[in-house]
Image (cartoon, rainbow, N blue to C red; front, side, top):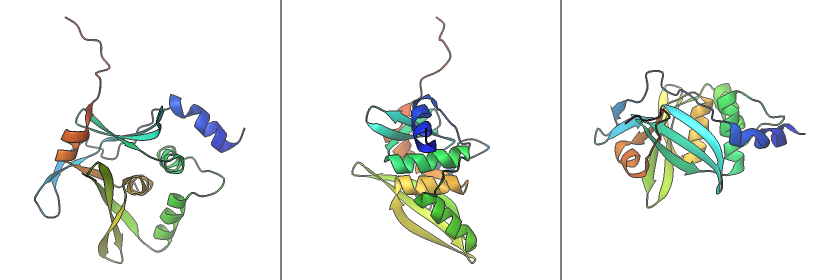
Length: 171
């Protein structure tokens, strides 16, 4: 069984967590100071009936973002440290940025007209540049660089679903 086949066969069983922020979710002001941002505390990759989904969790809520299989594999590899026989696109971007002295410092996920967007901030030679990207690509690169993933509080409130309490409730 190939590494990729083996990986996909166990994906539904995995619930891997990346603690992006050691101190847990925090509210921050964005660069314009107009809207509070929330730091995502956990990232999970799961396989659903509709395909791979990345779950961004903070403050008892989870935002589901459906991704393609390649991005799911890249995020899963970054979460687990597993190296595939050949680098995926995010692995290559990570390697190039590091070789040139650059690094991802954060990503901000927004929601516009039902579509998630990523705003990837990269530091290089003492400057920070912000790049528009697919949310899945910016999440993958943020995880590769262990950079914070941020969402607008309004996105968390609108798109976030409550995480079921795992403890049994008593009456």
